[in-house]
Image (cartoon, rainbow, N blue to C red; front, side, top):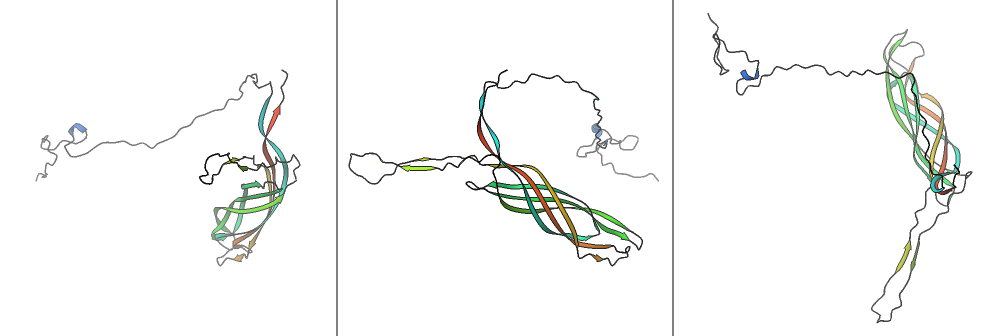
Length: 263
């Protein structure tokens, strides 16, 4: 018995069968049929380095007639010792610490005007790689490696010895009232004033280097209730004692007269 079908394409039959819809010109109205091909995107980079490159020195063009320049001058250079005692709580039991890296960030360094007191705020960003237990037995265990980043804040104040040069004295703002001679009838009080505002150059800090000495102590390590090798324990808190040595210089922009140079 011949197979029956319904012609829904709206196209004339070819040998009793509807045409294959493969090309857009055979596409019936209202039906979207496309043949597409997709390829996975791929980035290809090919490069090389030259073993030797030549260069040509150029004459240096500089001002030789003398000038007045504003440049930062060193007021003081000092090394500050900062002592920190911190407890870090982990979100899961830790078998051991793999690596710890430290980065110092200073968010405020302020020399209080008309004093020798330096105020510093900052943080130590610690990147900690640690291991947790994946599976274990009496003879060994497998680990999952994890990573966390924590910020340890600190703040301090310290007196400064200006072993470079003294900072510029602060110039205060002024305000003075004055009056005009009036020959007319008095109509009421008046007010006249001259005010002057000075914008003093503020000293600022430049970081030179930092050195951190630390000792980490696991807090309340306990034996796991799983089978583990002898003396293996886990902990969730870490006490860290750090001594930081921060070397900075204190600078201030000053006007400097540069003499002429004979060329």
